[in-house]
Length: 301
Length: 301
Image (tube, rainbow over all chains, first blue to last red; front, side):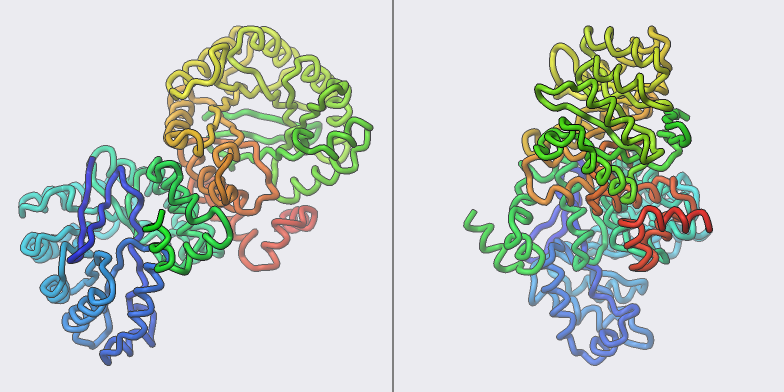
């Protein structure tokens, strides 16, 4: 039973086949958010703080932290952001950058066991990122593309994922610490994207036996009612074997869909969480908005 | 590629692996609806008429018709209801009764190729219902229980389904004309109900290669936010291979989930239907409420 264990200084989260699905909040990311980018560059983290608390209140069990701001000192900003985030929450983090020096800066200040986001199957990335992952005892997201790009053939993407898992083992990283991103393509552009990715997720789980994650909302890029589509997509991906995803937890439809699919998959014993969140309008409102009140109630229960 | 073809005098609907999911509207059923029961018993079909039109406008491709009223002349009422329904719509019908004489009365007046709902694996039911299905050239819903009751073991339920398909063949009914109901159990009572039924649906599709249908809402019996749960459940069942379901199409969340899952499964080419229904608030309102306007628009497209 594959389990990827992530932690902060005081809290552990397990991504695993027999675990509730892990939602990794995607909001702390200046890409496409001009005001946030400007503030983070200036060392103003008030918006980051709000995003941290809102995402956790909405149900995120981990947070992704990205500081990709053009012409900025990304390693320093990423490290500063991580320290700030860890000072206000104990949920484990995913350290997200395409710059190796930024990943290292983030890892060097991180308290606990982080998820490094990400490595691809490209030779230079493997050689630079995997040693870092090993050095800091972290886990890593493996994206199933390589020098030849992103194949539309799920079997080719499977082989890339397999190669990364094998290369990670050469560096002393266990397969259970590689969380594969099968790459969700937009169905508006590729009509077969859904079936492709479901097949790949299923092979990754039952053949390669690894945990998986994805940017689920990419599926609905360019089509209307994206939350409605994302909600069904994520339930179906969970049915195929997906164990985590990078999502916007402020989208209530998507969060509800994850909770429901946990019930269907048998990962919400006696529907306990579902009933707590949805048993009455008041409880539902708390579940979506009032993280602190909810945890008080849980302690009493 | 398994296809079950149902029809009215002028319209064909195909339940099939490569087809959009077929929603069979469940509303024309007096069980638990006292006013409807009273009216149907008196020969007053105004409420039935409204239910027919509302369900079709909401997206149902077929309608289930049940006239199970205690101490009433069910065969006559079922036959009358079917004639009334066929006089106002051309969607194919599922003729729903536990009384064989009522099934026969319904079949004798039905125009087209009906879906008989249902036969179980019980010996006396097989012997009574299957000859009728053959005589009228209909298709049949096969419920996977027998004299021993409903097994919690999906493999036992699979064997019951297989037995019914074989017995149907003995009567000259093709496997593609047997639509298996795997029996959805309430997850509130059986924590493993979701995994059980997903496994069974998948075996029915990929091993027995038959179409499937179910009373999807039974899954959420006894727990809160039933529509939210049903929406995810039905997407996941479609992912596992389910090809139709008896649902309340007036529940917009469930219908949206079916449409989204059709996109994911590649059964909505170029997301055509999804985009038409959801591209703007006006289009969405039409999709949910205005069947006639929508079909005009479709003809123009």
